[in-house]
Structures are given as C-alpha cells and as structure tokens.
Image (cartoon, rainbow over the protein chains, first blue to last red):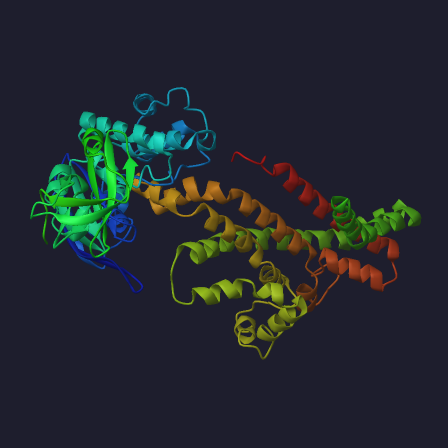
Length: 316
Length: 263
C-alpha cells in the first residue's frame, strides 16, 4: 500500500515537530526515516499510524484520505522501541490479539500464531510471558504481533534502539529478509545511518521537522543534497570551499600546486584502512582515509607536514 | 546493628500505636465475659446497625470504584482544561474532617439549603435517612481508588494501549483487555482501602443520620451508643466485630497479593 504525506505540520507547545512535510512512499518498499533526535521522524511515523493527529496536512493511504481515520481502521502494524508487550498475556496471546479482535475462527488463529512463532523463531516460547524473554525475543514477538492481522503497512519506531549491538545486527538482517519474503510496505525510524543504509531501499533524511532528501542509500552517499545530509550520512570534512569524504582525499609528501598543506596529528588504525587526522593552515581539523598498504609506503609519522588534494569535493 | 535499631523502632512503634489498643479490646471482652458481648452483638438494633453499614459499603464502594477508575484515566490519559483542579479535588476528602463534611451536607439538604427544599417538595427524605448517609459515606471515601490507580497508570504508560489500537481494538476493547488487567491490583487495593474507610466512617454519618436507634444507626454509631449508655461489654463486642471484619479484609488482600515478578 502506498503512503502519501501532504504538507503535514505538527507542533507540541512551542516546538515545531513537523514543518510542512510531504513524502511519497511506494507500495512494497522498505523505507527508512533517518534523522537526529528531535528531527520529527517518530512524530511523522505516529501520524501515519494515526496515533498522533497532524495540525495541518493530509495522510493518504493507497490514494485515499486517511487523515481522519482512527488507527484501528488504517490497517497498519506498529512496532514500538520498547516493545509495548502485553505483560499479562503469554507470547501466544500477544500474537493472537489482533486476530481475536477480528473474531477469526479459533483454529485459524492457532494456525496463524504457529506460523508466526516459526517465522520469528520463537517456537517453544509460546506459553511464556514477556517478562521471561530477552529484549531481542520480545521485539520479535512484537513484530509477530504486528504482522498477525496481515497489515498493509508495517511501521517500526526505532525497533532496534533498545537492543545491544550484536542483536541489532542480527535483527536488521532479519527484517530485510522478512521484507523480501512478504513485500509489505515497511517504514522504519532510526537515528543510525548505517542501519538505514544497510536495511532500506529508500532513505528519507529528516532534520528539524523537514525532509532534507529522499534517495537510495548509494545516491544519498554519492549525491547528498546539502551540507546536512553530507555530514549526517557518512563521514565528511570541510575542505577549502567545499565538503569532502575522507577517502576522496589524496595524501602526498610533496606539494604539486593543487595541494594544501596540513599537519598530521594522529594516525588511527582501523584494520584494512588507516585514518589520518590532520589540521590545515587555519587550524581546522579534517581526516583522510587511505589503505594500510598506501599508508605504509608513505611511511607516515604523527607531527609531519603532508600535502592534501581532493579527488572529489562538493560545494553546496 | 543499625538494621536491628531500625527493625526494633518500626516494630515497637506499631506495637504501641496499633497493637496495644486492639489487644486491650480483646482483653476487656475476655475479662467482662464473652456472654455479655455476644448478647450485645445479637441484639436486634445491633444487627440492624451492621446491616446499615453493609448497605452503605455496598453502595459507596462500587460507585467510588467506577468513579475512581474513570477519574484516574482522565487525570493520566487525557488533556483537558481544569485537569489540575480535578486532580486536587479528588484529594479534598483526605484533608477535610468528616465532621465538616457531615455538617456541610446537613446544611445543603436542610430546610434552608440549596437542595433541601426540592427534595422535601418531592417527598424524598434526605437527612436523618439513608440517602444522606450514603452521600456522606461516598464523600469521605472518594480518593482511595483513584489514588491507587493513578501511579500504576503512569507507570505502565500508554504504549500497550496504542499497540492495541493499531491491532484494531476499540477504546472499549482496549480498556477491558489491556488497561484493566494492567491496573487490576491497584483497583483491588483501592477497593479494600475504600471498604475499610466506609466501614469505619463515623463523623460525617453521625451528623446527617440523626443516629436513630434501629433506623439510621450504623455499626460505628452503635459503639458510641453503647459506650455512652455505659454498656461497656456491648461497646467492646461491636467494636471487636468491626475490627475483625477489617482484619479479614486485610487478610483477603494479603492472600490475593500477586507474587513479585511476573504479572
């Protein structure tokens, strides 16, 4: 199901959470809303779900105006950062909740819950209570619960935000595979650019209640629309008049006319890559990334003067 | 060492303040003979007094339970003008002496009060009858359910309810299936405390009931009645029975208390 956001604004007291936001999400896509905290991404997601009302603007689901419909009638599945597990119900009853509300036949509910327990790899946990599950298991349960009534749209609000790094990585891959199997239109909110780039087909970058850019992960990195996107998605430093990625800078030991002089402050070994932290004549810090082999040929040492040239820089 | 000091202080305090007077009551009944206390309890007017008390409990507790839950939901989940005022007003009965409550009701439903003449004209006897006694009992026991439920509602937050909405549940279904199970222990505690308060109410009811033996006398008023008429054994007996009812309410509450951890 496609989602269209038309000129949506929302204010909380004096705080402008969303400022005339418009956005199109294609049916069947996996989209990330990416931005720093306070950028309005969660508010936008909650407005799409009907959990929050926009002050102005419209939400269209499958081309139909849904702005006034309550969340019950929107056919969305919602996953919360802190799981929102029904604590007094077993895992099985949590997952069955939406189906019971729809008064589906008991045998059908049982079959569907079994199928979902299998899908989220919680077989054998059906009779436990949420308190007896780990964070990752609770979030998988919450996902199964949201998927049970077969929503047309799946919305996830920082779904992996409360989990540790290893479980996060696991669930990211899992969400991607799930989407590839079901093709349910999915929108998830994250402040982690790596997560957005790794999982989503399209990334919507938000800042201060506005959409800065909508693009695929690659385009977003290679063709950022403005300074904010350049700095938020991937590493970037100011270099002369423009902005440049650390790996788009070339480091030499001799000046050649187009280079700028800089002092090497520190060398950081990242494994395959080496990051050189430098300061230019004006004392502004920036960094250059190069392969370990290249760094070894140059025989770099902290404190020495080097010359830097950009292969590719962007001016906004 | 320090733990012992704390423990002894707490226990000693409870012993002197709570247990000593109640033990004295038991002791006196024993000394005076159980027979006298028993005959006082089984007297027709005493039985009637207990009946009146139970009627008041049976009306005030359910009403205040429903009101308390609705009120707590409004205070925690809704935004509306005057919310702070509602929040403060719920606690009013805690601050007001029951005697003041009784006197205010007496004035309101009296011959020159705002409501009194209307009821008199319609042939409804409010004062010195059950209606005013019910109102007095409700008034003094308003805060307890709301006060138990408000912090629990705050603690559980509204995400579970929102999750239920997105799964298709109406507000009503969400209340019965999600909110109510989550606050059920708070409600039960609230009901127990409200019941105890209604059972023990004296001041407000004393003023509006007129204290007519065999008609508008409650159990607590009966104790006072016996005491004033120098029937000490009777006073002990009725007081003891009231105490036992309260203690059994407490025991029921303790038995119902869920085990820590999983709920």
